Image (tube, rainbow, N blue to C red; front, side, top):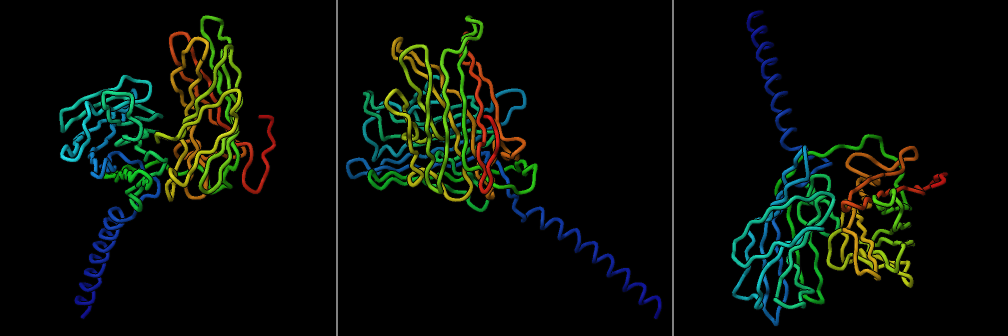
Length: 349
């Protein structure tokens, strides 16, 4: 009797160990990490063209390089030629880089990019290409972000932009995820107002400031508002780009200091971000700086982040960056939270 009882206890312990290991395995396979990077997407585009549907299919993937910029691959680019309008090329245009054009399908192209955007456009051999953009992409912090700033997740793997006036539909679905850094601090009030300062300096003039801007940002559930002022040695202005859509930029000059970026067309549901980039242009010399990274505002879990896992806080309210624009120009930028929800931030910034 004692031996039988001992054997039953031994069997129960053994089964308990198996059950514990099974639970660990199940949790590792089924519990969704809240903070994720998207490493690959499948993209679908349709748009009306004289009663026909112009269709383009593509796939994006990203390879994170520890010692340099990310490698972005745009592959399996195919066009439904039966319903396509006459065009000369499809072009991939990474920000601040030469466009890559082709007309043989399917096609694969590669380029390096970080904290920036790229677009796919239809080249008709004329200047009339507006409205035919089969795809946009944001590459930020080693992750693919949807063109309107929507963050892919396993709960929401697909993002869609639909413009009914021109029967345009761009849909991207993330097909590969990797864990991202969780917040470094417990939940804190989100930031409600931001201020950026950007200064372009000439190296050969002892780093004299040739152009600078200040912008104040606020937002609602659907829109981002910007009030921008700038100074420049010559007659010019500033282009502010938000995310990657073809209409997501505004030009600021002597007569325009305010702009609204309309979220009802571009911002996604759930977690999302604003990727902010600027370009200074000179009307006298008809030149412009390359576009440069100003900062990002990430909305996740009722918090606002300056980068992956690092929220804006009272003690750490600014994000700083420096970038070389050319052999003779550098730019320094800052993006700071100046007011948090339900409390004021006392700062001289």
